Image 1 (spheres, rainbow, N blue to C red):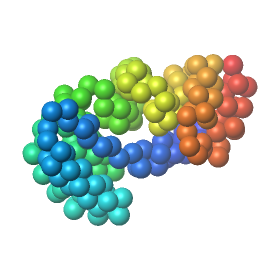
Image 2 (cartoon, helix red, strand yellow; image 1 turned 30 degrees about the horizontal axis):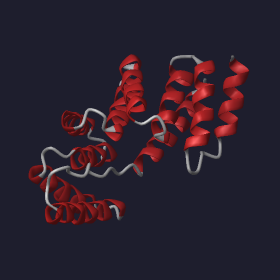
Image 3 (tube, helix red, strand yellow; image 1 turned 45 degrees about the vertical axis):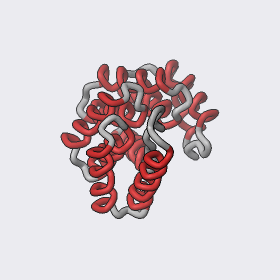
Image 4 (cartoon, rainbow, N blue to C red; image 1 turned 120 degrees about the horizontal axis):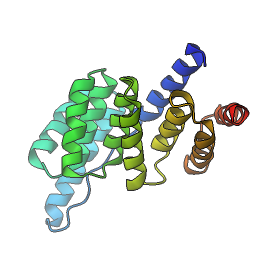
Length: 189
């Protein structure tokens, strides 16, 4: 497969990941007032992130991570910010901290898969993607990332077709080139 096609697919994956903002899991035993403060603070941090005010978002998420060290959401979002800025080392550290708080944190697992794939560690990437799917079988970004990994990097187009079709059902707005990818993979089977 030519490098332009692979590069284009990687860009699609990165663009798909850019909108992945994650919320903290609601506490089970904390008071409603504390929950309201957490939700308001988290909402402000997400809003800053969505407005591309990454410095403000980072500051807010860092404070949330200090105040609520058992919540994976702020740490996962700090990982997403570091990933968007190209700092994979910091991103990896934040994602691993998020997984320590919640081993099923799908955004962290998905991003760690992307980082592993970009480093050429395809088996590790597959492990992360499959762990994310085990946590949330309908999480569209990881379905597509695993399809790309199997199709492009591991040469398993038959396995990828099933995932492309699954992504088509799971995504609210599937990628416009999805039909081309399915057609191409079927032709290589």
